[in-house]
Image (cartoon, rainbow, N blue to C red):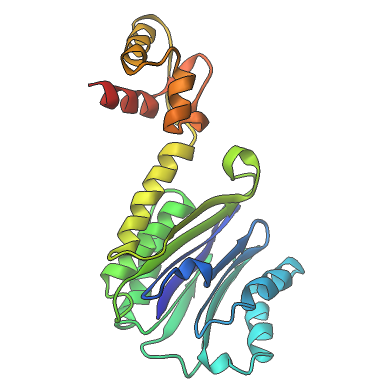
Amino acid sequence: MTFSIVAKAGQQWGVAVASKFLAVGAAVPAAQWGVGAIATQAFANLAYRPDGLALLSAGSSAQEVLDALTRQDEGRAQRQAGVVDREGRAATFTGEDCNAWAGGRTGEGYAVQGNILSGPEVVDAIATAFETAEGTLAQRLSTALLAGDRAGGDRRGRQSAVLLVVSEGGGYGGGSDVLVDLRVDDHPDPVLELQRLLDLHTLYFGKPEKTLPLEGELKAEVEQRLRSLGYQDIEDWAGVENYEERMVPGAIDVLVLEKLREQTS
């Protein structure tokens, strides 16, 4: 009923999942910075998430984690899971009673798995897209998930999707290690909607890649545009529009400038 990818890139770990199942993000993914990431699916055993992370934290490899989880699970024939550990070693498991088509594959730093799929081409499309995609881990996971969806995905249809990425201090204001936690719980095209949310997340919480000095003609332009919107300074406007993370003293992020111009054109 689900297809997923767990992966590590640099010092980030993440999971992306899609399914014909309500709010799949509440059941399948788990990740902890510096430890690893897990997806539990098919007839999912949700205990795999805390138990698996505990084993990973204790130093077990991805394969050792899957071996331990399934060995003590009487329902393992109906389970499917993927794990990537702190070193980027990956493992996948598909029980013999999972609904066809079901299977998985691993590559450098990732594991892909799915069940009730249109065929093995779904898993292959996810793996190929992840290997060739550019950008952040979140962007690569999102691209891979969409490739699997467009290759046939869950043969029952579409309903929900999730993207979870952890990075040290990556949360809002540095207050947690959860860099991205986006969920589409019920939507006719959830993977595409997840990409839209990721674009918004990047806009609101991404760090400026290019800034311009806020002086001279540019400063005058910005001040005039802010006044036309009823703001005295850029910080007040940015707070309303949720661009606080892109504020730079004495300068303006070119993306923020673009959004300000769009609002006042």
